Amino acid sequence: MRKKVQRKVKRAVTNFFQQEASSGMTLLVCAVVAMLIANTSLGPVYERLLHTELALGPLSMSLLHWINDGLMAIFFFVIGLEIKREFLFGELKSPSATILPIAAAAGGMAVPALFFAAFNMGLPSISGWGVPMATDIAFSLGILAFAAPKAPRAVVVFLTALAIVDDLGGILVIAIFYSSALQLSLLLASLVVMALLFLACKKEISFFPLYLAGGLILWYLFLRGGIHPTIAGVILGLSIPAGTEATHAKSLLSKVEHRLTPWSAYGVMPIFALSNAGISLISSSMATFASPISLGILAGLFLGKPIGIFGMTWILIKSRIASLPHGVKLGHFLGAGMLGGIGFTMSLFIAALAFPDAGSLNTAKLAIVSASVLSGIAGALVLKRL
Image 1 (cartoon, one colour):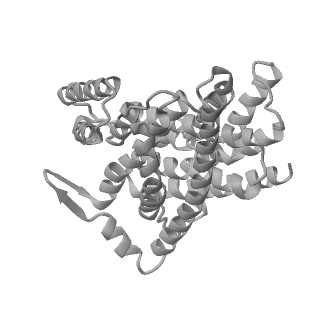
Image 2 (cartoon, one colour):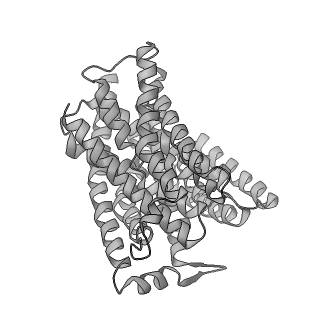
């Protein structure tokens, strides 16, 4: 029975890796299309469309806000499901297996934030310190699959686990530091909804419409209460019943994740890329790359990420707190650290929260894309030599 469960977990990791890798290619195409549109005569039409007000019941927001605050809640819901699965049954279950990716993710978040702060300390742009902390799991795994298709499975697991922990860190940063004025009464109401969701989970109620209704209510309460509404998606994902190790394959979490992940990977994320990666190069100049925002993001992602990830891994292995997995070289961790500098999806998302003015946001987007490209190339070159 135990070997059968282990085979299922390994198969799930392989499928996840393959799906994220192909999703990364879809994201790349959508990002390129968005940039092409933004720099042609269709650019003004593109901007007007994104800022068109759309009303749904009592809510009225621009199309861009519906995508970033509403549609992306599905993306965060899937992340919540992935986090719960990994900590209960996956590679993050065992403390001995989690120490390397968790420590590497912590270093890969702290060092880039310090790099950004070094360039922006005392400036209004310091609010963007969370932008270079993120790792795009789809792009990073996509480059890994392309550059090192025969890389040891331990490297794939390490990068996957690191990116998931990184996502968790990004979620906490958004929830704590990028929330607006809080409405206490609405937040208290949201606590009641959360308690009911987790009570239903504890009772192993597998009626998904119940969780969906609770998630929608929680999303609305967060939106009105001052917490970014996409956090409701994460909480909903964590509240879905996962079953036991023996019954997980038939659990509600497994069923929902299996059905929803492709929609998130090939629907939600490409739409997000199309609406957020439209960077106007016409309005950019060399001065844009020399700005504190740009330098902070470039240094944070391209230098801070590999320094933080590889540095923490090297320290743990050399101090014998953790051991080098079989068939893995230290160079694999260096390459993985460089791929960690591909921020894209989560970095663009945090940038939209950190920089409300169009000029700063465009600068941040350009730096994110540039750093992600440089990190992907550098990581691929390192991994190809191993």
